[in-house]
Each structure stands twice: as structure tokens, then as C-alpha cells.
Amino acid sequence: NVPVAKAAVSVGFKDVARLREGGSVRIHGVSKSFGSHKVLDNVDLTLAAGSVTAILGPSGSGKSTLLRSINHLERVDSGFISVDGEFVGYSKHGDTLYELKEKDVLKRRADIGMVFQNFNLFPHLTVLENLIEAPIQVRGADRQEAAVEATELLVRVGLQDKLHAYPRQLSGGQQQRVAIARALALRPKVILFDEPTSALDPELVGEVLDVIKELARTGTTLVVVTHEVGFAREVSDTVVFMEGGRVLEVGSPDQVFSQPKHSRTKEFLAKVL
Ligand code: ADP
Ligand code: MG
Image (cartoon, rainbow, N blue to C red; front, top):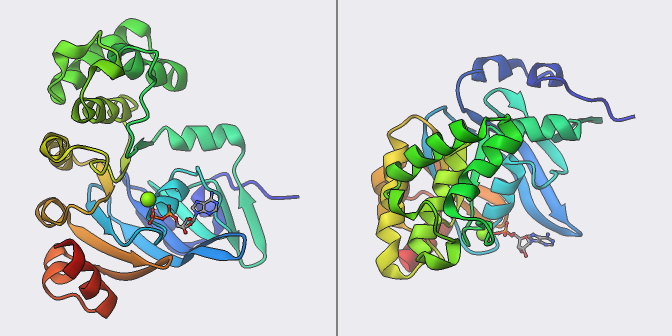
């Protein structure tokens, strides 16, 4: 007897209607535990459509769990998440539970691209096949049309000559650029990056950050978990510092990096800067 929320509005948050614009993300009172370990502790964040948010914080602070919750890969215990004004997945508000049907979850997820630390390309598929898989499966795109669009995306990430290569034939930086193109192939409103350069050799980090920088200009909402402070300072509108499952600090890059309010932010920055 779990009621199914048809839209964010039916959840009863007064201000949800205002968020019905391309790609805003609203996280309200979200908590999540694994057993007795509280991994997200009453997280509140509102990300404007088209904004770029960098999330920083020590290992284990809940950054990946937060991204996975936005994409409904994790089910939160309480609170509410909406993307583009549409309620995502599962929520407990007061004593009331709301849960989307699986097919609605899949529909919502199509608006949200995700790029992982370890690329997660399909190893047995070529670059082109990796890119057309989701548009065909999820959006019902025509194969020919999907291939044309995939080729355009590969031009955008500078890999048009790798159309028929397999992931193992590419460098880490190239694989991650393919993964970004693959995320774009669904025309998402929001793209979540979980430490997209952490697995790369230092000399390959720049080419991936350059592609993300380029995306930041296109109006897609980007959320990037990263330890690259220089990149966050240059590209993001908002910097979020998390620790122990809590958002300790939110502000402009200048505020957070130059005048952190919280002593834990200062200590963390002293280590990564
Ligand atoms: P971060 O990305 O900031 O390093 P995570 O969100 O990956 O943090 O993890 C936060 C905490 O939750 C860690 O202590 C981690 O061990 C724990 N955790 C994450 N996923 C699971 C899981 N599926 N089961 C149990 N514990 C988990
Ligand atoms: Mg992580």
C-alpha cells in the first residue's frame, strides 16, 4: 500500500512547480543509512538548471551515494529528490511513502546521464555501438539516426577517428571521453560525474576536464564530484563540501576556496590544495 506519486506536485511540496525548468535538481531532507551507518544525513541542496556544481569531500563522506540517489540507483530512507521538477523514485515524507513504478523510474533516469570513475563502457561493443545502445533501447531511436548523432558526439569529444575501436584499444582519457559522449547520447538534462578523472594518469586528466568544461557552456546541468580544485574553481558556479554524510558548506568557488567558513573545509582544502 505504497502510494505512487505521478508527479512531483502530488508529493505536496509547494515550491516544486517553480522548479519546472530544464534540469534543476532539488534535494530536500535526504537521509540514507547502510545498516546503522548513516551515509547521508539530512542533505538539502538546490541546483539551478544549467548550473555547474562541484562536490568535494573526503573519501566516505557520501558523495557517490548522493549522486546515485539522484539517479535512483540508491533508494533513500527519507526526504525527497526531484530533477527538472519531476520527483525521482522513492521518498518518505512524514509518515507517507511515495514510490514510482519501475517503468517511470527508467523514464526519469533517461533525463540523467552518469559518468563513472572507471568509464564503465561495454567492453565487447565498439565505440559506436556503445553510443547507440541507449538511444535505441531507451528512446526508441532509429539505428541510422542514432549512428549519425553518435558520430557528431564523437566529433565533439575529439574521437571521430575511433568510431570502430573497442574500449581496450583506447587510453583511459579516450575511454572517459567516449563515456561522456555516451551519456550525452540520451540528451540528458543533468549529467552526474563521479570522480571522472580519478582513475586517469595525470597527463590524461586535462583532456577529460576540457570536454567537461566545454559541456559547462551548453546549459546542461552538471554535478561533478572531483578533487580537482583548479577545475572546480574555474568551471563551477557552486561548490559543495561534504563530510560524514552532511553538507557542511555551499557557496561560490571564491567563497568556499578563499574563505571557507567551516574548519573541516579548511582542513580538507589544506590537504588537497
Ligand atoms: P564517497 O563517494 O564520498 O567516498 P560513498 O557514498 O561511496 O562515499 O560512501 C559513503 C559511506 O557509505 C562509506 O562509508 C561506504 O563504505 C558506505 N557505503 C557505500 N555504499 C555502501 C553499500 N552498498 N553498503 C554498505 N555501505 C556502503
Ligand atoms: Mg565516491
